[in-house]
Image (cartoon, rainbow, N blue to C red):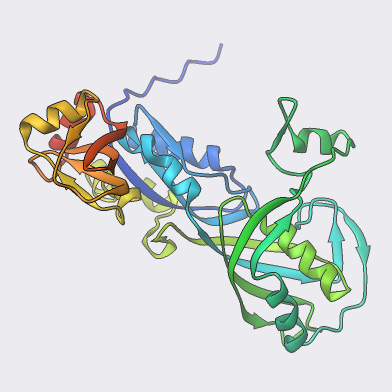
Length: 315
């Protein structure tokens, strides 16, 4: 019989880790590896990166998991490599080649096309995606050879910039920086740009470089984390409120803080705001998020008293 692996004692960990997700791992696989390294009780990621994509993946631990939706909803920036001249079954390098065409694209031609895809656009989600249809992911149907009709969705491409072209080749491989709204499929964008150029294309590589103001330059790899001791890993975490860093701050005294944590509304001399981050008297005492409506502070997402105490104990 195989000996059972010893159970790792878990502990309360609070904060945000900026992970540089490696090629070949799913977002959940990367999350589970980081969670084991931290011996964390509770953790979650902030939006799926495909196994073939790399780059910035914020991971939330403990109290920070309550605010992961903020990162999910944020604009994101990607560095995308397009392979012109061939389309695939998955719109990326993982799929089988469907069609190959001759490529004769200049930088000026590419620039003219990408300008047509800047701003609000409509995208049809790819079959090889995690979107659900009748409780099953679309990629399950795709693997079974079943095509499901999908409605086009509205997304916004804020910016597309040509990084460079492969001058050593025939101009069939281009790198783009894309800043876009949530829900944008870069694979679909690559495919649509290829069709607009008349030669077809698929996404050869993808790297996320920024999300919600957090950048890849701050991120660590799993290998770097594994080489650290526990204290160094703790120091690598951003504060639990890191995803809300650009929201207005509200600070409360002891009495008002206690009432806020119990969900009671408080009338305070505050300017109206759609979203604020709220703290107690101690700057480390992050209490949660709220909004201010007609001078009334209304909670939207609260930490538990145990979580607040955990933050206060964090060095």
